[in-house]
Length: 189
Image (cartoon, rainbow, N blue to C red; front, side):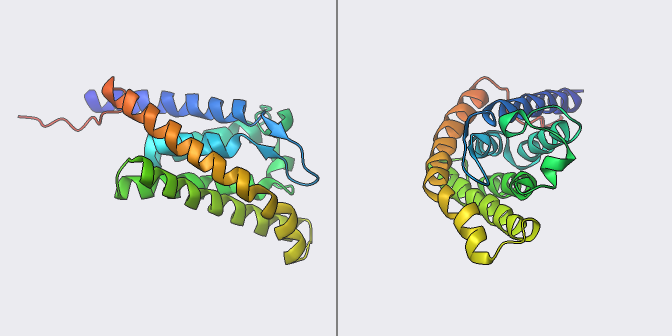
């Protein structure tokens, strides 16, 4: 009973984070090929707060919502065309990004220092995945793909990684203090 309530609560929280990702995706700075968005900040927050399983679940829910036509991707876009277009690699890359951030934190500890390291690793994962995809889909040279899909996002990406780590740890600690993120594993006597 306790386990099922915990899982339901965490699935609801994951769905809420999917909505948060969709909202932050609308914060956009347009660039020629790939815009700068708040998505990566939201992905970092989800994984830092929720960990591997539920942080990744929130990303999968977000991608599914966008794929079926809910306009949650940057600039109110949706559909499989976006997932398989030039920016699709960044979107698909959010799944391993959330996995890496959550996994790193679960294997070390949920501290600010570790959260910064995890989010920076996640940022590089998303940028690498997106740049490789961009090169293949847009038939660009490696130099053009790096120049258009990686380099412009480094500074802003590092800033978002630090912000996600700081805010994520603060929110996670607050949620844990209110028993919203405590585990269901209660010893039975």
